[in-house]
Image (cartoon, rainbow, N blue to C red):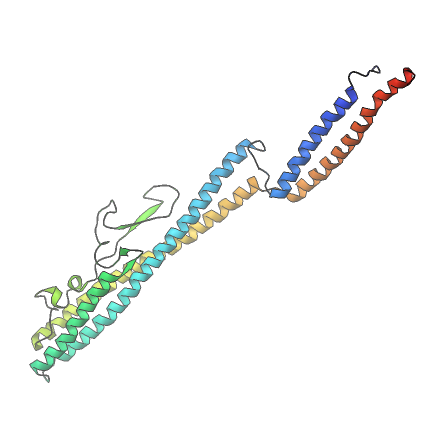
Length: 291
């Protein structure tokens, strides 16, 4: 290689090596500072695409967990109201049992029936007032059988929209006094009144039927709560495993990257030193010029 002054090829070579080493050093710094192996599509285009899909699924799964937990809370709200209704039905049967014996007068049975009707009215009030986030639970609003969900509650927890995998419907039967067949709201049914001895005797069976209906609603709610709890567990496991897979793709191996950082740092320092030396070499030409 001749001694020239117009083009310092050694300096150009050193500068090119410096740019390469410095770029790699910048990449290592970016990865170590962010904790991510992939900070842009340039780092790993295919890996970035897979990572973003996984991140979306993870967030959707976590929202599905929240949806399922909200449904559990809703069911617990309905079950709590039904437990109070259970107390009212128990008191109504106690009153019917009292009125069914012959040791009381008609006037006394009317007093018992007054409390009996008050209990029935309270059952209806509880059923119509119980709601979760504005959704009525026990007034029959969710007791339909429409498969499109217009009369049932659709609980969505999956990442897609498949009826076999991503959601199911919650049905809650009506629990008003008329639906249970007790109190004046039941019309002329057996459990409508206990104002007479015979009416009180027939009311006993009607109240038993009401208790069975109420227990059936509670049993269905309990089964749904268990199902939703299991769903939460499965979704949490899915999200955890998907997070682990996303970490393997996206997160930086600090030990490996620190080794690469040190290597690039040394190469950059060496390139800077050599560039400084190469820049001084053309001055040798001055000696030939008598400088």
